[in-house]
Image (cartoon, rainbow, N blue to C red; front, side):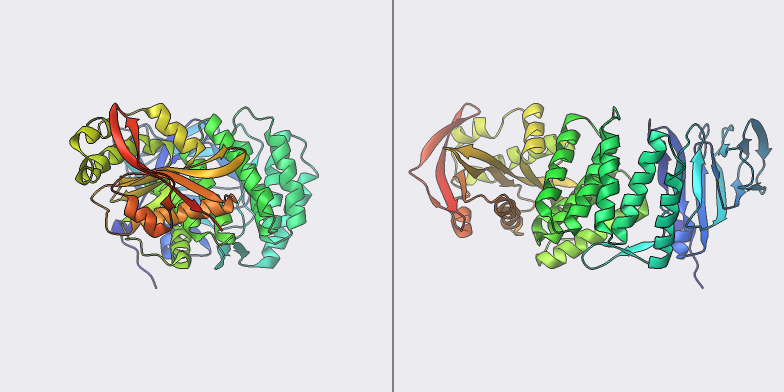
Length: 478
């Protein structure tokens, strides 16, 4: 037996992916009950909000109970009122689409019941595509999808291939290429997965939005990752990143990019970089109230990566990859660090211009998009950052650390050392043999402990109109 109280609910805002139109606030109650056979969800409809887009099911029957208020049931061209305490039944035998809407000034609450079916398809009005619910799977210790029942997955894959024979519309074929590729990958039929996902990538180039192409580049990269063809996988992630930088994508897709890149690093035993990507995915999904299964996936992956990395990160902190939204907070943390930490070794004249520079959004965002930038997120605030750039000098590729700054809130908790260790993983992955930097007076002893040596005498750099003393340093990577 299991009892779930209402105060355990954490509703998620549903919305239409194409334009962001808001639907109901929804909680999948069957997840909380850990039910395997029922699909139950509780929905809250504010005034003028509808439950979902017009849709129908191909297999399952659906029952909606009006828990509170008065809902309008839209069934094809028909509208009927359902009062509090009413039951509404939808049969898959009818081809009409349906949804509920709240035309009153009061909140409406509903509970929807149906059987959980692996092969039910949801068909939305105005679209010939069917959204197939994939069979259940779980993550193993290497964060890979493992079928809960391989026989069910085999049947699922066979059914998808059979559907492909009768589909001619490009969108329908693209969706099936994607589903077949992902199903084959889950079954470790990697050559087959590669074939179908390459077809999906090819078709995705015809879409004006980059989002579909980014999704399929990531899916294909996963296949190469599981084949241990890591260079091919990284090339595809680089292509996806270039597209993300070129055209704004949804927060959901940005989180997915970081989540799956983290899995690639995890497979290569770069656990510091893996946890940084999982940390970013977790941060985005927490901020956007992502579905529970997505947030759980990121949090579980983050915990496993930190465990493998064997570092002690406080529960209310992340060391993660920066995203463009972090730009202003990074600048503020940078300036606070100079004003409150570097001021102990540097003069007031040095701090005046150096530590009071105006925020340059274009410069900060460009660094986040094009370089390797990490942040320390502590209690939901950026309290430090590290900035590494791969560049070419005298015909040789090398890395340069442009900054590693922490505010007093997080100093003394090994965040600086951990940021540097993650940067070093990126350097080694990129096969760089030399790292350079110009150290502040404050950080010189820290860098020496990490293995840096002096690379010349003290110099003076003009920063923000102030002349600031610093030390050129270098590290040779063996």
